[in-house]
Image (cartoon, rainbow, N blue to C red; front, side):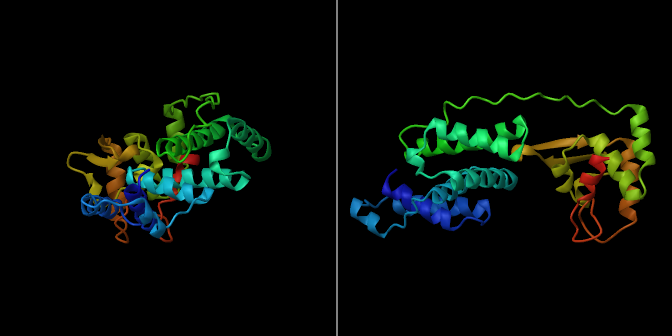
Length: 261
C-alpha cells in the first residue's frame, strides 16, 4: 500500500461513525487534493500507524462501511474479529491456517454454538483475512484453506389456515393483530418492518417500498384485510411516525414478540 493510500485510510479510520455520504465526500476530496503531489517515503514519519491486531480490525470495518455494508453486518464483523484477535497471541502476519481452525474448534466447544453460527464466524474471518491479503498487509491468506462448515438447513413450513387463526386469536391488542396480518401479507424481514414509518404505505394502492438487505429497494403489497387492520391501528395513535412501536422509546420490539409466538 502506498503512502498516499495509507494517509487516506488513516483519515477515514479517524472519522468512523460518520454518515457514509460524508465519508465518501471526504475520500473523494482527499484523492483529488493529493493526486498532484509526490509523497516521498520520508513523509511516512508523520503518518500515524496502528499496526496492532485491533487496529487492523478498525481499518477493515472502516473499509467495509465505505463499501456500503449495513451497520448490523459491521457490528457482526466487529464482534467476531475482536473475539478472534483477543484470543490470538501472535501478530496477524504470523497467523497460520491451523490457528484459525483451532480457534473455531475451541469456540464451538466452549460456547456450544451451532454449526450455522460457527460458519457465519468463519465467513467473517475469511472476509477479514482476504482483505488483509488484498491490501498487502499479509503476503498470504491463511483463511483461504478454511472449508465451509456444514449444517442442516431447516425449511420453515408456511402457516396453515388453522395456524393463522390461532395466531390471530392470541392477539390481545389491535396493534398485535395489525402486526400479525402485516407480516403475513408483506413477507418482510423483521428489520425491514422496523424501518418503515406511516408515510411508507400507500393505502390507495396498498403498496409500499422498503430498503432491504444489501441496500436494495423493492416494492411489496398488502392484502385488503391487512391494510384495513393497519389503518385501524394507525388511527388509534398519533404518538410516532414509526409504523409499529412499543410503549417505551419508540423501539419496534413488538415485531420480534409476534414472530416468536
